[in-house]
Length: 231
Image 1 (cartoon, rainbow, N blue to C red):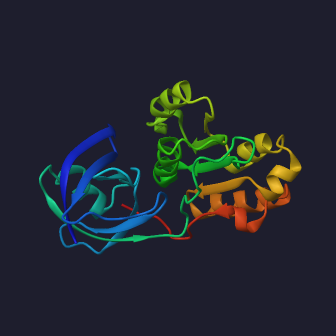
Image 2 (spheres, helix red, strand yellow):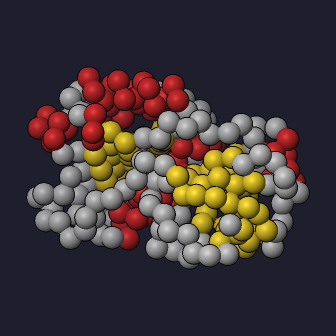
């Protein structure tokens, strides 16, 4: 399938946010990703940052100086048509809506770096569907300057009583999050709370181990194992 780029934003010098409109509407679940081919390069996986009910796909791409990244940063323009395929991925938000607040399971989302993109899709979807339970985001980056969505999440927090944002930098996000999660009721952690993780593989592995140590059940921990491409 082909998609047209309708806008390109640069929240940071090495990050581009592409807004795509597929030639045919693509049905997907919050948390999934697609494959994109730019200018004949190999198909690569990119998480979808926008919610499924919208008519477009937002893709956040960070360049580390590679050939594909340089092309995206410097030679991609609004109106360009690119090849996409998907969706893919099993880390999906699929909770029912309209639950009583006493029964809605807490959602805890833990993101490292650009792993924030599929997590953003899940949060936007939960809020749009008026999810009744607590929704908590823990986002870790190496530097505070890399928290380019901090103001977005702070605004969500100010308008939604059940959403909380914890942005941290320069520390292991898994360890930070689990330290706070440890204050939850043990039965809630074991049987109800749903965890969504996205980020570099070492961060995922470390966080999964820490969550299981505090009693989280494996079937309540959701993540994808694909490695984001180097750009």
